[in-house]
Image 1 (cartoon, rainbow, N blue to C red):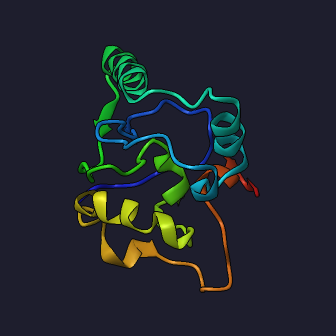
Image 2: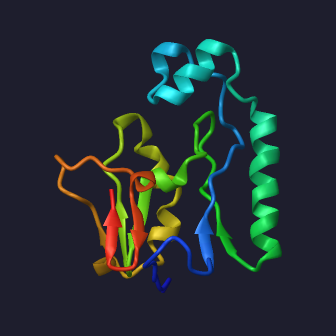
Length: 147
């Protein structure tokens, strides 16, 4: 079993789920952008190329390796953006919370299911359908949770 213990954003990192850029797919059309930053880059012609994203993610992985941080990576879904894994789930204490993400992103959770399967099922929760939250919206600081 994978033991979770996240209480703040500044303690020593022991393991992380790092996104993956392999088979990210082509630059989306502006109609298909589901976040404002991607739309901004699509319209400006500055949306990153897959090969550049792969190099960045691999460099990030090497930094984690250098400091002894265990790295989990999503299974590759062909032509699918899997960069922002923090959005799809997050940990508070010893509980993994699956985000209620946009329907266009739900397959991202499938790509990390092998990791979720290593967590005690009693410690994996999904907020009610009407609660929309992404992991990037959550910051822990000891007894405080900033959303």
